[in-house]
Length: 332
Image (cartoon, rainbow, N blue to C red; front, side, top):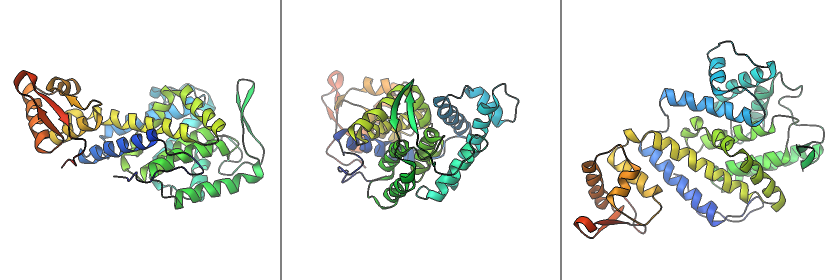
């Protein structure tokens, strides 16, 4: 489990209480993932999530193909669509299939990924831009990227941050995503590269991220994604964007765990509840609301085991029985 001690203000972001809290919650969820052996989900789920990742990231950039069409391309079936949209999907399939081959802190590896992602779409795939660029929102300029002559230096600084900073990789992935978008190092493909490389970084924290469709969570709240980028631009720090992306990572992990709850052991259920239930006191019925698939008898056994493992303590008896989270005790 990653350490979140010492998250402080640096040149990229400010270590707010929200960042610290979200980071801690993500660490607990990763603990559940490991305890429940969810690092590598089922083949069916891995495939479905990979399709979601590819379709969502490309859809954000204007690709019109849906998840079924992406699946058909993976299966070498004929798909009706523009040549550009189909090429984008084929490139994305190739690069996502190679996720674990990329070195997260290597510029050479990073440029190789861009070359695959954008081959046949731009003339200079795999190379930093040599011209000035701006990001438009409608007819208005939303962001003017740094000059082309400074791109390589800025990217070297950013990769030095990945290698040298004491920040954990989950924080680094969010910072890199924002800063890369700000620098806009390529003539095209910056958005999809930012999302792709965040996943590459996250995989080095926990293998589960290879098949976690965080891109889909961004797609659902696309406007908030753009707002977080714009607000961070205005603030001169990427704090708001880091908070946004940590929330998306947390949501993705919770959905993975929730989808696998039928296969959880009693200890895994207890830890999941302890991590995610927001109130300090609760009743058995509250536990059953979270785990609707288990019986009253199973919930009663879980309540007792939770006490034995120091996750909570019992308050009252019979009809007045409630449980209080042991927030100050280390669970076994």
